[in-house]
Length: 140
Ligand SMILES: [Zn+2]
Image (cartoon, rainbow, N blue to C red; front, side):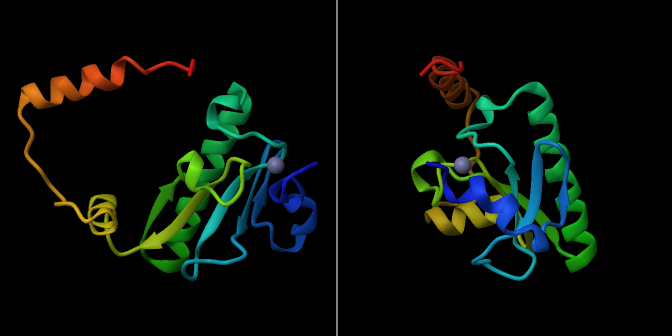
């Protein structure tokens, strides 16, 4: 059974801002603010790693076009965001573009209740890199 976003391209044709053979850009049904749009693969994919090279290129091209258009339309700096798996409302891969008056560091720090800028030592950064490197593959 297709998910809601599998049907979105057909169901929301009147609102599609941009499309190519692989992806489309559309205003989200429940926008956080004016200018909130999504980049959605036309065919179901759950993660960016599920996209072929052509589809990945199309996804990022659409994201760049959406960011440029949102900046020109709203005069604010666009943010490109992809939810982690367990926080998505839909299993279908999608990215959000939002006009913003803050940067990612400010947004994330406020959302997570952490200090926006920490000076880390070389040893701390190396330990962080070592920790992440262990899991740096498409295998889960
Ligand atoms: Zn889907």
